[in-house]
Image (cartoon, rainbow, N blue to C red):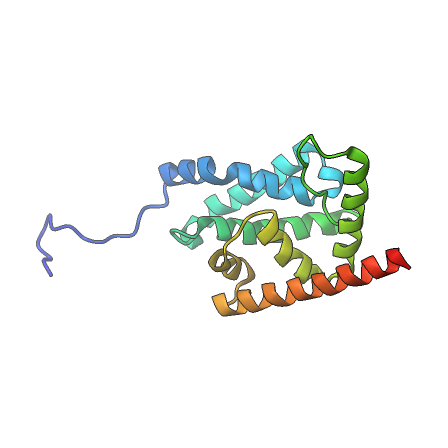
Length: 180
């Protein structure tokens, strides 16, 4: 290895203003959407903006803790804490609003379906709900989910599998109750 002056070294990227600008450009919209989907009735746009800004401010303050090539999972994990703190300040909140569907869906059917999904999701534990929503709404991969949950990839896969199984059981029970 060449340690002479001027020799190239594999130094970690600097978490400077340029890094933060790129982080902001790449992930601020995803953070905003994360909060919009999780605030009651979509929340106020200003609430989602404020919470996303809080996550980004935390990323700036703790920039040396943000792992390279895994920024979004770190941001989502931080967003989970920020949202929990926000909820503690407010009254109990229901499951967030289901995302918009295409315009060709009958609004009456959509309202019934949305209500059924909310009812079934409310039967799950907060952890199962969080896992399912991170994968379904936020599109996290297995590796990203593992980082957000703070577990191994195998642990994340197992948690997702168990959450999906419990969702199927809850959905089947809900449909049997509706058919009865």
